[in-house]
Image (spheres, rainbow, N blue to C red):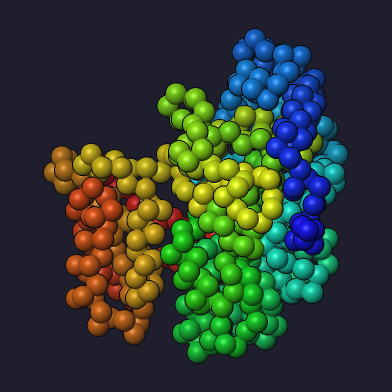
Length: 443
C-alpha cells in the first residue's frame, strides 16, 4: 500500500502518465488562449508564427508555438519601461516586484506578481519541501539575504504554509549565521551549494562542529548546479542529506526538486510545467538519456505567461521509473547540469565549468577554486585551475598538484590543465550564485 504521507499532493504526484498528459493539455490550451487575449507580447509572437490557440489540439502541438527568449523579453521591457507589454494584468493589481539576479552590466528582467501568483509560488515550493522531507515539526534556517532577487522568498512562505518554524537570517555575516545556527539548532538549512560549503568552512574556523553540535537533517540547496561531489562535501560538513532544487525568477518558483530518497536526479513538477528537452542547434526533441536545452512552459503565474521559454539550461531527462519514490513525474538526471552557453572550447575540447568543479571537489583539501582562461600570443588557449587549500592542508600541495592535473586531463580528452596555488583568502567567496570562471581570452 502506498505511503501517501510522503506526497504533498498525492493525487497529482502519482497519477498515471495518461492522466497527467491530459491535465497538461487542458492547462496548455487555457494558458495559450489567455496569453493570446491578454498579452500583446504573445499575440505578436503567435501572429508572426501564424499560429492561433485553436490549433493546440494535442501536446505535440506545443511545437507549433514560437519560442520565448530572454532577449525578446528584455527588448520588450526596454521599448516600454519598466515591464513591457508582456504582463496580462494592470500593474496596480501586483503585490510583489522582483528582479533576476542577472549578469553584471546587463539589464535585469523585472517581474510582477499578484496575490494568487504568490499562493501558487509557495505551493510549488511545498511540493519540493514536503518531498525532501520537511515537516511542521522542523525549524528552517534561511541563509539568504531578503532583497529583490526572488531566491528563497517562495520557500519562506512555503514553510509558513507547512507550519515549520522559520529563521530568516537577512543580511547577517557568515559568522553571525553560523553562531545562530549553533544556538537555534535548526533541522533544515537553505542555501546555495557554494554558500553551504562556505558556512561549513567558517564553522570549522570558528571551532564549531556542525555535524556534532547541531541538529541539521536536511540541507536544501538551490540557485546553482550541485554535482554529487559537492553534495557529499555538504553532507559531510552538516550531517544531513543535501537535497537539490532549482527555480527561475522568470517562473517565480521551483520547477524541480530532489525527493528524500535521493534518486540521483530531480523530479519535474509536471502537473504545473511542461519541460521539453531540445537539441539547441536543431531545436528537435532529444530522447531520454541525452543532454539538451530545457524549454519550459509554466502554468501557474497569472501576471506573466511563460510559454516555451528557452532557458539555456543543460539537462538530461530520464523516466519517472528511475526513482522508487512512487511519483510518476519524470526526472532530470543530476538536476541542472550547467548552461548550454557555459561550454568553453579549449584547443578543440569542450569544457563545462560544472564538470571541472565535480573533479576539484573530489579533493577535500581544496577550500575554494577558480577557472581562468587565457590566450597565449593570440594563438594558443590555456586553462588554469587556481586552488586555495584549507589552512591546515598546505603541506599536501606537492602531492595534490600533479594528481589534480592528471584527473582533469583524463576527464577532458587529455587536455592539459595548468594547476596553480592561490594564497590563503585570495579567491572570492560567494553567498548567492558563484562566478568561478574568468574568460580573459579577449583581453
